[in-house]
Image 1 (cartoon, rainbow, N blue to C red):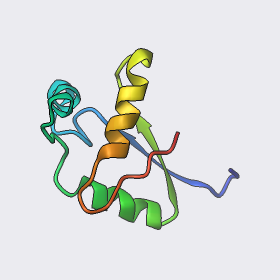
Image 2 (cartoon, helix red, strand yellow):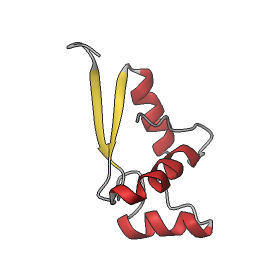
Image 3 (cartoon, rainbow, N blue to C red):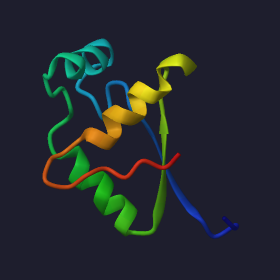
Image 4 (cartoon, rainbow, N blue to C red):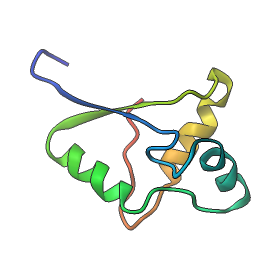
Length: 83
């Protein structure tokens, strides 16, 4: 990356998900708790040349679950996780 790289920084908990705790727990039991049209919004942001950085208050131990959640979002368009 160089000084011309554009970034979009976003929270996951309560921003990508409809709420913090439920957004983490509900997908574990098969309930989608993702904000409506968030995949399209983030895809549009990415298509405009921004690198997306996702932030979460979850512990380091939960990072695989959080990544799996983001990669599994399907609203007709998948979110692209930048790791």
